[in-house]
Image (cartoon, rainbow, N blue to C red; front, side, top):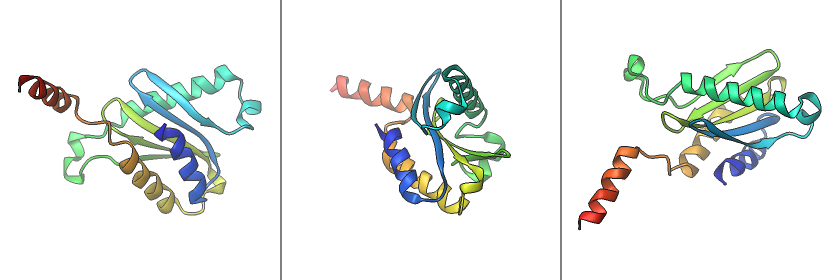
Length: 143
């Protein structure tokens, strides 16, 4: 799974202590990495609740934002909390990847975000425009 590979990639970047990685598609999401000590800090239901809220916040930051069209599409959102930094990368309107880090461990935010973005661009190509995919499928069957 590409999201699990993302967790491995982020650890190799050595730009911050990874807490968790969540991959979401619509209402469904998978916690593909959770650091062991978080199981002691959070009950499973508490961690799932936090993951669910992060996914919902991800829906607030879609890839295309018409009010900022001159800036291009949104590559990532970084939320700085007192103890935790959360990086959300939308893949399309309803899909994305969320990675959380210990705030005090981040040594180079730019390198961290760029490393995540380059990995996501290379590994998550299957999230294409559903209308284009439907058109391609229809064209394939019409030949």
